[in-house]
Image (cartoon, rainbow, N blue to C red; front, side, top):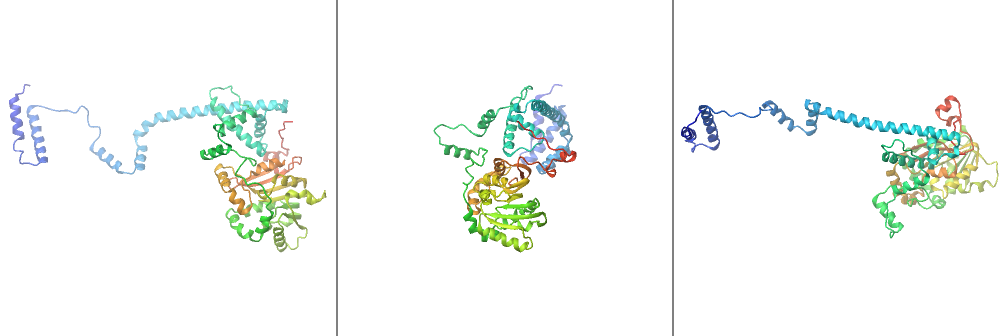
Length: 465
């Protein structure tokens, strides 16, 4: 169809005339109506390339959803069909990732089991041929309790092994069996950073503290542990007010329950070292004890203990009260070999000894065959954040209570040569509950693992000799 331009122009003029007196909106509406009529007269039609994707109802629903809080919008989206369709690829991808992780994990377990079988075969042929890592691995495999220092070293080996497996992820034949020197070299790289040679040791320590580098300390190199000193004079002056000042701290930590456990372990002839003001006396079970001796370096505290005990148990005659230091236990016996005990116990005393290792060694010499040393102590925790707090407050704690509460109790027991038959740690690992024996003494039936009790067998220990 051929259009006459003059006719179109005149029609447009007609459609748009008399608009000067109308408002803007009225003018636009009127013009659109006239143009639509013109289009129909001329036979013109305009079509959209795509149909409308949403209806007016869907638009209204979307507007309502957009007004909702974000968490409700996400909840509605998770229920929608659009989400379910898009999740298929994520399910497949997640399954592939989980399958890959599971494969490498099980492969690691498989090769570790192969290594353990080789270690056991090697041990049967020649126990001395085991490396340090193989020896610790075999002990852990057979669920034999590791000594505190062995446990620390085994944890370092496990950390090193984790890094070794990550770096040899695709190497199936890689075997982890480092020497102690390799462990030491690896540890040096992990906890120490390179510093310039012109920096002093103090400057390096300050840098480490500022960078918050995790340093594994022990009782000998931790600068936060107060220097050992004789605390006798401090407790002589503190004796009268000690109970009133310490009771709220103990009640907050509910230490009465722990002291009750401690006193239940007593039997036969008993010695309490660092008895203090006799705070364990309310939990004493006289029917299980033949005799009891209280020892403390403070004369005033021993007198308070004697007063409490005589008031609580006036009919219990076999009780002795002695003033002396745990470091001088052997000298106090004056060479009398008949002075032996079935149970020696101590509550929160190792932290105040001038030489706690020597104190434990002296206790060991006074044990009867099969005797036990029972300890309830506070010390370093299982968690670094709590150890940092103990170190931070160590100086104030020493001034307030003459107590070095950031000592590693396990390390002290290990250095004294005792074997731990029972260990439990509470208060995030900062309160230690231990039962110890001499290495030559046999383990008691109640101290055996469950399966050994069930089958009536003695636990087999791993020895390199």
